[in-house]
Length: 215
Image (tube, rainbow, N blue to C red; front, side):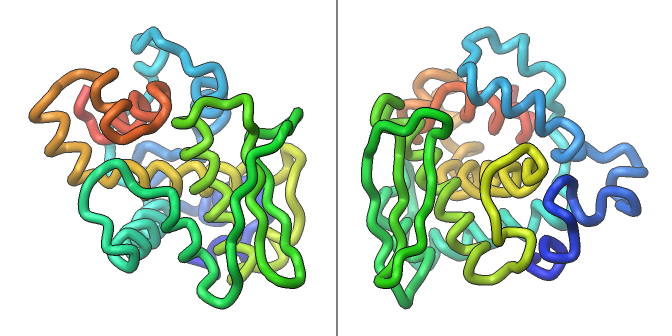
């Protein structure tokens, strides 16, 4: 996965222009990223706003992100929701990862590489569920900084939007593993209860259920 990511420019999926999956009509997460980001940011409550999202298999890039998330759940010995926030410290097994809430303005989260380790900053005005999603989004950036260059050598700016999509995908996969979501949905079939059980924003859960073809 890191090879694919570093071979791109950070703006689009590195396979975008020659992706067999996309050319066959597969649901390309790169194509829908801007609309999805708007839904996440606004936390829209009307499920009809999510109808453009179709349940479909993932391309190989996002499959690899999903496998990465599964690896960290297994390493952290997490078997049911909600995923504990402290497994974010597995992002770097050589250096400590500290989490701080602060009064961020422009972003929901940020990471800082210090000499002794990492600091993840989370916006203190956000809900607990939003902070959890942001936390694992930022954890992906730590993983990427450790393994991928030069695409992840800078942060911020719209030109790096695909890397943000990857980070959102990692957060979704680790907080809402597909098998857990399928099993719980069969039991409750209620969006609000699902969001509460997994402790994620309602908008994020709605997108996950749509991607899995459950609603």
